[in-house]
Amino acid sequence: MHKVDRQPRRSSLSEFLRAEATSGLLLVVAAAVALVLANSPAGDWYDDLWHRTLTIGPVTETLQHWINDGLMAVFFFVVGLEIKRELVTGELRRPRAAALPAVAALGGVLVPAFIYLAIAPAGPAQRGFGIPMATDIAFAVGVLALLGRRAAAGSKLFLLSIAIVDDILAIALIAIVYSGPLDWRWLAFAAGVLALTVAVRRRLSSPWWYVVPALAVWFAVFESGVHATIAGVALGLLTPARPVRGRPVLQELEHRLHPVSALVVVPLFALANAGVDLRGGALSAALSEPVTWAVVAGLVAGKALGIAGTTFGARRLRLGVLPDGMPPAQVWPVAALGGIGFTVALFIADLAFTDRRVVDQAKVGILLASVLAAGLGAALLAVLSRSRSG
Image 1 (cartoon, rainbow, N blue to C red):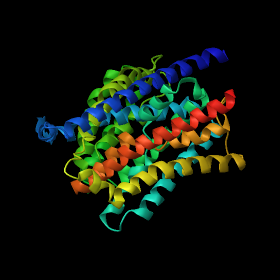
Image 2 (image 1 turned 90 degrees about the vertical axis):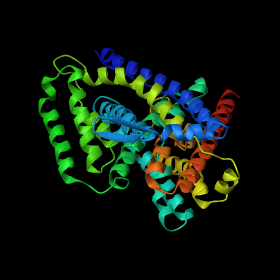
Image 3 (image 1 turned 60 degrees about the vertical axis):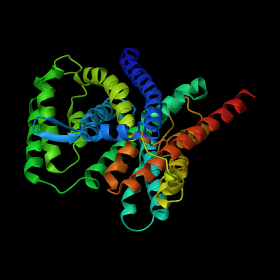
Image 4 (image 1 turned 30 degrees about the vertical axis):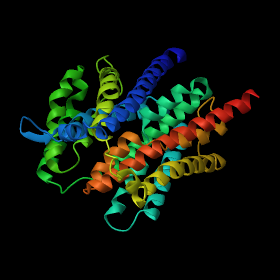
């Protein structure tokens, strides 16, 4: 019976990791294409494309904002589903198993934020403290996938668990710090639709019943001043994790939407947001600005020290345990890979600043830090692999 219960969990986790690994590769390709286009003779066309307006129903936004506010709600909905599944039926349901990645994620959020604040100049630049707090699951898992058996299966699970807790903290930050003035009427309407969804969810076994409430909640949250993507998270967290009338609603939704999120939404987001114009001395100018290096230091040094330091400290205090099969030495490469903050970091950069020059400085820092963190994590895993084989 025990084996039967664990098989769906293993299958679901394997499917999730495969999709994330593929998404990570597509993410790199999309970011590279965006950078090439932004710095080519087609640069003006690239910039104009994403700033064209599109009207859907009562909402008129630029194409870039439709991706960032609309399609990214699907990404955050899938994140919400994964968080809910992990908390109810996954690794995070067991206190000792959840304690260590939770503590590690907290260290991997606070230390980068403090490092950023220590380096960034006073004033509006300080609002970017949330940029180095995020870990990109797809990019980091993609690097682990490329390294094959050098990374233990437990290390992949540990990184995934840290990234999930990391996402919870990043979502809270977006809702509290990076949302605009609130319209409580629309917020109350959104809360009412969510409450109604909770009240009847045990009677709705078909995932299609969630479409209309999802659209209503998204529009209400969009109008309320809270960032619209929070609607996706809320709906994901309220989805039943256990079968409804024998039908696994959460698993069906995740099975259908995770490939869309991982293979379409995230690469499209990278294509629309990673294109930084580095011509005319813009790159050297960005590299001379403290915001750029605050992001780099926060992601590369802050994540590695924050995650590894709190992990080893928590283990010494016996506050939690590493996943089965994960060597303690692999905490360091996993912590380094946590510095790949691509998707959510780019997302927060656009929310944190209004000055496009500062946004571009932050994006240069994110791109540079992600490459450095990926290289550092891969190098550490390669060294550990050689030392074990020797």
